[in-house]
Image 1: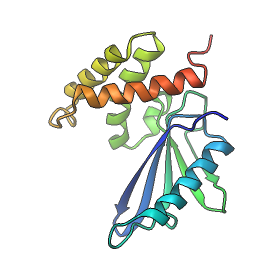
Image 2 (image 1 turned 90 degrees about the horizontal axis):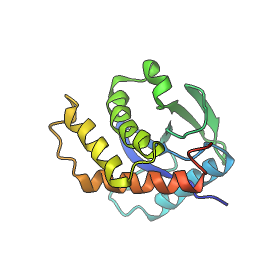
Image 3 (image 1 turned 120 degrees about the vertical axis):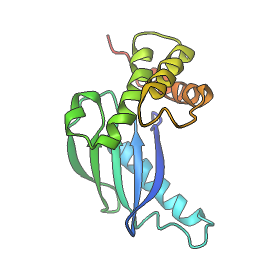
Image 4 (image 1 turned 180 degrees about the horizontal axis):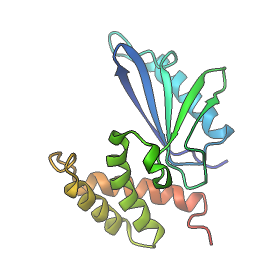
Length: 166
């Protein structure tokens, strides 16, 4: 079984708990099962006071995988929870909230560099440059190390899932 590549970010929208799941692997049954398991584990192990309601939070999946996928849909996760899915690939750019477009510009610089065969350090540099040129992100202190770690994760996923496909 292949790895599922994702990151989870807990957020509050007003008073509503939400979990953003950034998924770079294909969105299939295996991915949904891994996400559901991770939410349960985090719910059990959360030591914050009060603990974050991982299992009860609304789940929004930001799909940034390499396989074709609709712009927006809902999916049913194991256990019956419904999750919203927003495709954050460039071909869906016009349908994205503006806040996601900034992220997509930066991460696409990294991803496209890797797809073209650039090294991880070259891909990280492309992402860093895109962030530095962004009116919104240029005031944040993103390090090359941060983007190199992102490039390593993307490269690992691409190799495991067989990208770029011939």
